[in-house]
Amino acid sequence: MKTIKKELTTAQNQEIIQTLKKRFEANSNRHKGMDWQAIQAKLEAQKDKLWSINEMELTGGEPDVIGFNEQTNEYIFCDCSAESPKGRRSLCYDDEALQARKEFKPANSAIEMAKEMGIKVLNETEYRALQELGNFDLKTSSWIETPATIRKLKGAVFCDRRYDTVFVYHNGAESYYAARGFRGLLIV
Image (cartoon, rainbow, N blue to C red; front, top):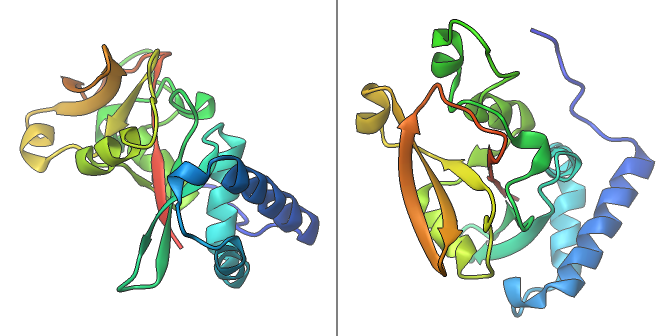
């Protein structure tokens, strides 16, 4: 297993901060009443999390702030790309499913890639909350955190939005499709 350097250069830090600031200003409906300066200060104090957000950006996730936890004083960043992030598609659900495939293995799994990026895959509640902020996955679908009872039976679940409704579906965890990826979440 290769070791990934999980830090950005000063120029990369400035670039991702500027990208996030522009997105924050352009999508105020996602974070009403939040102050960019406070968010930026949190990001600059947690370079490892800024690295993870940059990974979300590089894989097409278009991360943005979608919430704030007042008890913990933490911001919630989530992939807000219109469709499941392009750089995170054609993945089976988890490493167990990847290892179980005998032929035509995908490059990675959603759960493993999320771990490598330092983020988590959305669960159903988080996915539905994201859909309250806009219309996502109208042409694609996204793996979501699968309950252990379903995963034990070799299944996994994913979501999408069709007919102005969020649907939850099931599939074998070993399956992968060009239009299915995953959305990530990061607490800062």
